[in-house]
Length: 287
Image (cartoon, rainbow, N blue to C red):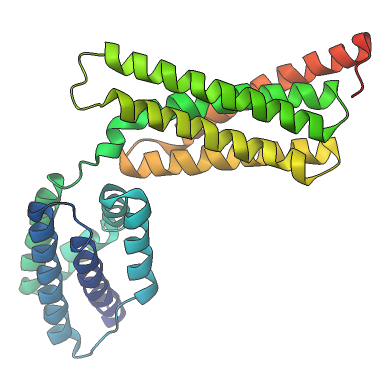
C-alpha cells in the first residue's frame, strides 16, 4: 500500500461528501434527508483522517459529483446510491490492508459498514414497484414493432407507408396495453403498493416511447434497409439501457436479462423477415 492509494481514497471521501450532500437535497422525506446529511458529514470526517495521514489537500472529483446527482434527478436516489455502492468494493480491500498499520482506518471501515445499514431504509424506490408494468410495455413494444416493421420493410418499398403504418399500429397498441396493465394491476390483490392507474401510465408510456423511437428511422431515411438496420440498433440500445438500469437498481445480472430480451426481439424480427419476403414474392405487394 502506498501514498497514491491513500490519496485516491482521500479524494473518494471528499467526493462522496459532496455527492451525499447533494443527494440529501433531493430526498423526498425528512428521514432520508437527515440520513444522507449525516453520511455526508461522516465522509467529510473520513477525508480529514486521510488528510492527517497524507499531509495533503485533495480536490473532489467534480465530474463524478455532477454525474451521480444528475443520475439521481433522472433515475432516482436508488439508482445513484446503488451505482456508488458498486464502486466501494475496492475501498473495502484498501481498508483491510491499511488498518493493519493505521488503526484509525479501522474506524472509517466500521462507519462505512454502518452507512450501508443506514442506506437500506433509503434504497426503496417506488418506481421499482412498477418495473413489471414497464417491462410489459417495453418488451411488448419491442417484440411487436421490430417484428411488424421488419415484415413491412420486406413486404413494402415505401418508408413513409411503413413508418405511418407502424405509428398507427403502435399508438393503438399502446392504448390497448395501458388498458391491459390497468386491469391486470386491479386484479392483482397481492401487490398492495401498486396503483393501477400509475401502472397503466408506466405501461402505456413505455410502449409509446418505444414506438416513436423505432418508427423514427423510417421518416428519416429513404432507404428501407438503412432504416431497418438503424431500427434494430435502436432496439438493442433500448434493451441495453433498460437492463443496465435494472441491473444496477435491483442488483441482477445484466448479461442474462439483456441476452434474453435481445434474442426474443431479434428472433421475432428474423421470422417477420421471412414472412415479409414471402408476402412480397408471392403476393406482389410493392407500395
